[in-house]
Length: 218
Image (cartoon, rainbow, N blue to C red; front, side):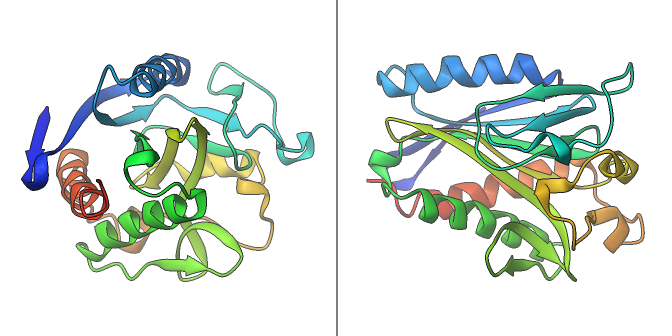
């Protein structure tokens, strides 16, 4: 799906459906390389993963509380951030953006990703925000969205995950994002299971993604 916006801002939106983590990771690496060389425009990959714990490059081993099993994989990644869970019912987004055309600032980029999720949740009457000193998006003291990125030559990969209606029991196998004092939540928990379908939420997210990032692109 190619979306052309005013000011000649173009994003290619790739909906991968359900995918194993490693498959999406390999695709990201190829697209990042192509974006660095100028072969492609900016991309946004959307995906639901099969159950997996992913570790950031500096994740302490004690943040993983379980072992790999038939039900869940464990993958060491090259992104920033700590350990997190991905699985069905969670919308994961991987922007491949050339920040040379926006702002060459990692902190700016992370705050804009947080704002993206905050704006999406507002559409469903969920009042989300940030927590001082911590990355991610929070509702009532619990994390609903996690972020972790990798940037090479100012081109991004990895991104964010938004809990829509995942099985939250998987978080019992880790110390999510290395944070012990706060829990996790989902749209289903907050909306008493009255959650829009994944397709609608993807459309809402794409709308806000374009609204946020197209303003800055030069």
